[in-house]
Image 1 (spheres, helix red, strand yellow):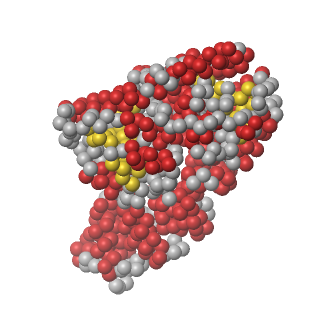
Image 2 (cartoon, helix red, strand yellow; image 1 turned 135 degrees about the horizontal axis):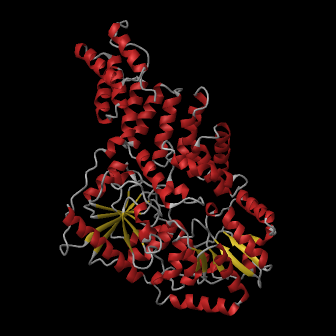
Image 3 (cartoon, helix red, strand yellow; image 1 turned 60 degrees about the vertical axis):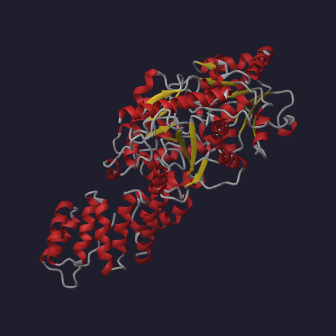
Length: 634
């Protein structure tokens, strides 16, 4: 980072001490810079270059809290010094005060608008607060101004485009960066993620083979959520990347000053205060599965609060979620420190993070220890990679078997049946006719309404093999972009399946209509290695059996957890051959298909997946156990 210029301060010509100081700055000898700068300031406390050099040294030494008073003193005499504003902004960013840093970087750019590094710093800070589209212009300007390739800025630009779902633009950036730097894992990983979203698979298997050994590189810290989508990646690799990513996301200064809060609650004294923090309160899969659970929480045992990291989307689901909680607080405009302070002020006992490292997350709040007990659940199917972030992760016996516990930095706690809740209270509309949905009236309909990034060559190979053996079948998929539709039809044709046998659903006007639509399908196909999760719940609620395959990782075992909790464990195959055989069995024997659909319909009255009263009771028991253990442990 550019943190100091070349002009001497103090109002005179550069003397021997000043020249020596500047040489130390250029050599980035931070300890020596601090020593010499303090010597000069001992003789002249207003020496501008020494003040700036001292701030540079403190940044380099990671002593960010000390930077701000030094810069503030220097700015009294040099308020128009853009480099000082940049130094201050860097210190703010490194202590996770990103909103304040954004304002300070803006002041720096008002003085130095053509500084490439400050533009990059601003773009990076905007990225850290999930303002992805706003970050793009600053990053593009930084890249334009920088001599040669500005990899740091390009990497952040690629991430912003990806998270903003500007996939075609992201593809162009990532592809060019990978071609220029083929051995750099960052562009290759981002390119591979974009390829999955676009279902452009020409080079994807080669890319993943190339990426896998790079996971061992200590310099590569990728979001482990992205690895969920790759096949051939195991739990040990997820853990390594999660630990490395957590270290890259939480500044060293913060990691060194963790303060665990004491548990004030005592058993029997009052209801346990449980809070849920999420960027997905609204029309989102997380809200769709969790609403009934929140409504069913026993207020004699727990008081429930929500901290919404996202803006109100105006949806009916947002209104329902808001009314389900005892207290609902929008914190989307607050900094991570303000959010943590608010949670502490509200005396939350157990804070449940529903995001992990997924899009829109603010896991940094957890690093500030906002509650005595912090828990990871539901929205992120893996370890967060650093134990001070979350004390516990909630799983079940299938998604996290005993032999996998070593791959988690959290303590694993388990629900007795499945970790995934369902919403049985949401109405299901009147099923439309197949013809109105563009489906064959008498054909066999296989459906999978998952996001496009969960589809991949191994999974699609299997699905196309099945279609080749069922000539009257169609594969009904979620609505995608024109790019996704064209690519998937092309992939099907390359596997011997006519492109028109892929039918893409239009968007349903309401959730009740969406659930009603699913019910016209014969079977739901679970993708792998990243299973359906909430989409699987939707299929089972709609009465459509889900055929799945038990994998080796948390995200690849969710389908098996769901069908077991629905009382249909036989729908989980051990391998691809078993998966294929299951689909063909139900196609060829319609009486068996009718019987298992009837069992699924009957399960609505008794199976654990649909019993949200018992689910809420079991979850509350976990929270109470966690809190009680915290009382005795601290």
